[in-house]
Length: 111
Length: 116
Image (cartoon, rainbow over all chains, first blue to last red; front, side, top):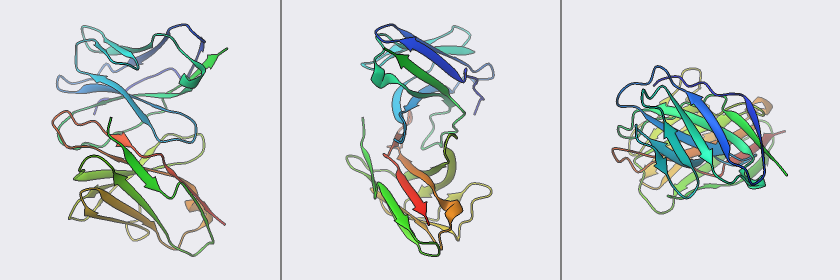
């Protein structure tokens, strides 16, 4: 699976949009981009995933560049409960594949 | 999304004892489950892949005789930490997926193990 690079930490004001970047310049054509987050002392929570088209669900939006070498997770109206470590993971979706976690981005939402 | 549970949520045991942690997929069947370990201020590290009806596959450096994994049904996998020592104190997390083509892994809430 391709390696990802994320900034170690970010801050965002409550109510504003939080934009979390992820670089995955070695991504292969059949690899998806997955985003998870982990709130302190809890298991990771699935957020969203995509292949090449932009995706949106009730939690977030995922914007993938046309060359697929980077992506951005957008939390449109961040709340204090969005404070967590966010992980960007690239993997093939075939069968039950393991997830390899990097260090992620520690997002702090400030009041 | 799919729900994965773990039991217990936290356990404290004496050094030398064994501890069993259960991971259940509540509303779907999981032929494969994964076990992770997380030390304070570190990321999740995969320990092993648990396959229903067959032996688990362990990551390099993980002792299979110390961390016993049993996946007896499509909804239950167990991790037993045998002869636990203080260095085994950690946050243990399982995940499971439905095995579809675009499989999404869902995680349990984790089990905090403290070995005295």
